[in-house]
Image (cartoon, rainbow, N blue to C red; front, side):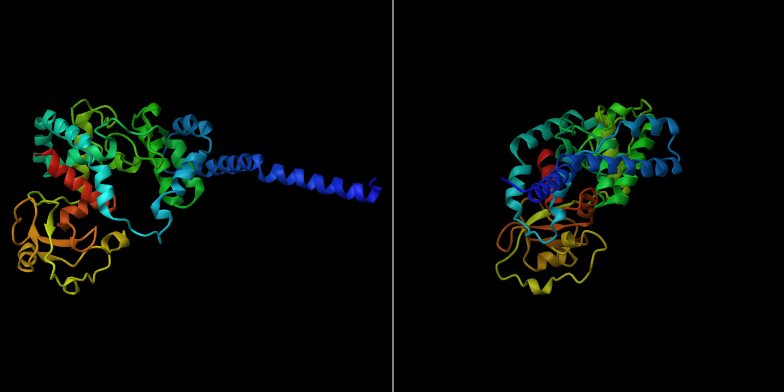
Length: 348
């Protein structure tokens, strides 16, 4: 039988354990929710300071709760682990350039030719590039995400890894509503991208276009608006008309890679650009024994860098300044290469 003092100590220990369970178990979620709700007061003040209407703020902020799934997905991203090894491109290419995506892209390309031709005339952006972006981002409008944008963006801002970015995007989503976008349309990816082009809200505000003349930039249900908006994005990012994005090439076995090093440091996406060689003209690459695999040489004066995404002896690519424009859309070599290759495939 326990003594009074021993029993008292055990009761106190049990009480502490129970309190700890409530503090760090289930109620930890409630504590996070409480912190999120407090943070929303800051977002409200920021939104109002940037001119968002009181009606929009009052319609959205009281409806928001923390989305733990968004936080989980953000922490799983490759960028969250900068020391992770870079895999080969071939598996990514096989997954992202499957026959169904190409055949659907060819159908979309054929059905929208008249509209695409008009946009290309206005922007200089090739029809096939617009279709390829549409295909990679949303499978030609079929998969646009199911996350509530304001909730996802407010959650990412609260998480704090990229607080300034996502706080601004949250406010931009409210500004979209002030411009007439329905709350029900603010659906997209967990990271806040929306519509056929998967624009962040700030990009929508700057570059979304009305492609069908109805007075609205409806990138959710209008194919014309989606393609016009993609064209506007690429034109704004500096696409050079008449220049390819790049081309697949073979590199001779005796190639001296020590002569093509890149001494320039990019101000953004350092690891992406670090994989590129220095710039040379097409004529200089030809003189070094590099040879196209599937298309003719561009103009001799066009500048390009070389990338060997699967290592020496495998398919390499010469990449022009227009490739950098694709990287502006999504700063990933694998993404940009697959967009360029899909564009080549859909116009065949």
